[in-house]
Image 1 (cartoon, rainbow, N blue to C red):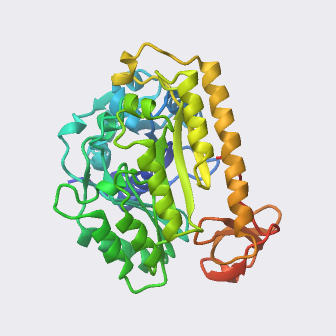
Image 2: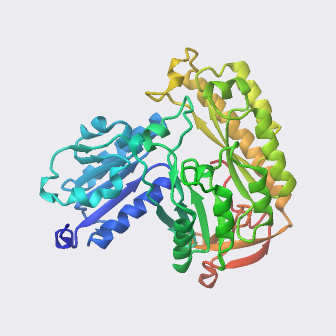
Image 3: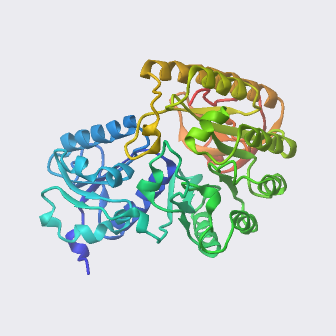
Length: 435
């Protein structure tokens, strides 16, 4: 049994890198510590403990994690530094050697952080507690919110897709999730706390319920039946799991927004085979057409990776041509970096770093053109905006329409966390182009 008095008034600093899932999990850890007496460090104060939740999707992500550890050690030289997350799961020994690190926790262990803090005085040297995540069957839900209007609800974790470029299964384990009943209950609790928008997030969200006999579409239907003034968004869903039934459901839904995020990764069938993706470019184009048929004004975000091994100039040109012909709203471009323990390292053809950047720049340009075209089609249409609490230096407030267009207006505190019907114009569009 942990003595709460050990932690009373101890100050903690948090630093999260990577995806929305990581932010939700950091929030879950933060709630555990707050319940035991920890308080969040304020500007100018020195923390007793620093918790860093890491990402390892690229070499750049690893580098940022190391930078964060060094920066927090300089700011809080007496603090005990605990590092967890995907980088910690994949390379715990590497992290343990960084100056200032007291404890490295794997992705399974991160939710039991309090048990490792019980021996507070012994956390003076680098310790590693990192089990084989592939043996983990338990699902740990999590919730986060950056603005009090929008919450992120973790409904799934892990992935059973062993794409050749990706380390996520090694970092997060097999696909697993909670039940529909548990998830709906969590959503209702969030709504009771004032949430007006909930984003369903996970590693492979469409696999919700895979191991307990339930389905993603059944979860959506149950959430849609919640009697409250709230709306839902679905985070990234694999193309092979985004069925026409789901799209049609969103089109007829009371609460789910016309907003889809779909990983393409490459517009070349040859590269998709190298990646071991589970669809063809024809399949992907069909998904986009289905969305446009049911929801002509839907926002469609598409992920792509450039510069993977085996992506010759010819195959990249195919990728560009395919993407240019797709009717989407925004492209999220990721530049490939070699990851240890992945099958892609067996491919000899390697794209030079400078060429990877050129390809990335080209796709970002295409994305900007697509986004501008999407916005222009929306001008003059009526939309419902959920206004957020953030106030800019120029005195503006911001909010998103159903189809994810960020609008602005003069700040009015009475509108925070409320819905308002507006007409979209060039003047009130505040969305940034490139991401």
